[in-house]
Length: 253
Image (cartoon, rainbow, N blue to C red; front, side):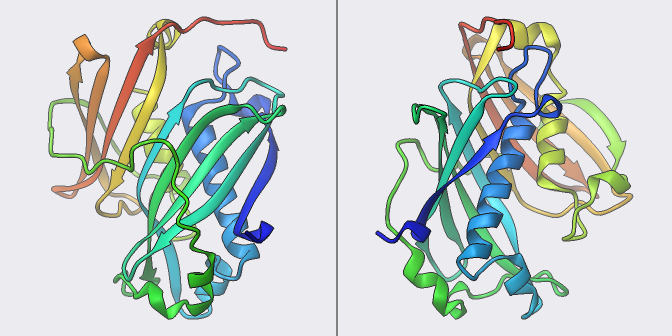
């Protein structure tokens, strides 16, 4: 396999990326995954800058992350990424997260679509002829992103999308959704529990000024939490977080 088909990118966990336990936050980890995907797509000729020439852009539909261990402040990590498959309307991109010694920290898998930047309508991925040869068929050893069902529980937050929430696609940035969901838990909960798996589905865009309501359904017996994010009477996002016991804090290295 050509090295450009599957490539690892180095990162250092910065102080701005960690929480009070000196562990990288879920939103910061998601941001590194997105940056890795962007770098690899640009290097291989089907990144956002290339797509913009045809008035297209990438949007994330679903993502799943499973972690055995979260890296700490100043740790060197590597995120390896590759395209698993390409269909007419979506493509699967995978990630392998490793420490400086190449030990596995976790895996992630994601599903993307290409839309017209102006009309926001899905586009045929097969028109990206050069992208087809990068599909490796290689999977990751975790379940694909789950299609989450409606579970509209109790209202846990209510606010409006602001300037700092919007990205170059003119809608709320992916990391903001993850931040808002993460903020629904207390520091004490993060002290006692460790996040094992995170699933997120994106259904519709949230734009500047749109009202946002976050609903939470709790299955505390199984340490599982379901989120439904709504805007303008539409579901914009659904997420599922599964935690486990065994979290402990160490001093930062």
